[in-house]
Amino acid sequence: AQSVTQLGSHVSVSEGALVLLRCNYSSSVPPYLFWYVQYPNQGLQLLLKYTTGATLVKGINGFEAEFKKSETSFHLTKPSAHMSDAAEYFCAVRLQTGANNLFFGTGTRLTVIP
Amino acid sequence: ETGVTQTPRHLVMGMTNKKSLKCEQHLGHNAMYWYKQSAKKPLELMFVYSLEERVENNSVPSRFSPECPNSSHLFLHLHTLQPEDSALYLCASSQGPDPTTDTQYFGPGTRLTVL
Picture 1 (cartoon, rainbow over the protein chains, first blue to last red):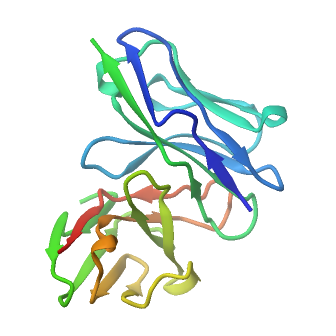
Picture 2 (cartoon, rainbow over the protein chains, first blue to last red; picture 1 turned 60 degrees about the horizontal axis):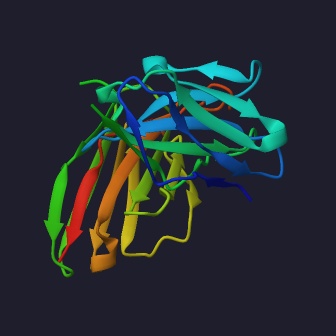
């Protein structure tokens, strides 16, 4: 079975500081990995995803994430936080084959302090 | 209208009411999904439809009844709900079937409150 753990339900950073949101997964086989962002009163928007190839993936809004198989991690980073980055971030996994069933973490709420 | 739309955006209902949530995707996708998002819990997949046929039902109570009349529309019919069913209900769609490109796109959700 697949599962996702997001360490830290709330993360606060100062504007301009590094953003690091942690995601670890559990899967019997290497999964596909996703980060979604949810702004207030909106649905989830795909930030980036890893399927195959380069383990460092770049997404929208300056975010990137690195797949580390040995650590079963897919942490999300951004070098410099912007006020507009304040939102809730969800990590998700799915199997490489079979149905497109996403398994989500519980989310991390990012606050950016001016 | 583009992307995935959901109506209504907010719904308040009593436990004896019958209501329906509507989802429409304008992306030409073949699969549609219903998720439940409750506070402090992971998103829960409720139903999956592929080419208008239900392919997944994650043990959802029968008071939730999905309907997919065509590949662009998805409904969630609600009947005799409980207060614990209050949540944000999200619809998503995806193209399928290539897993490397099969990304789910989400609507804005319907905030449901059951009194």
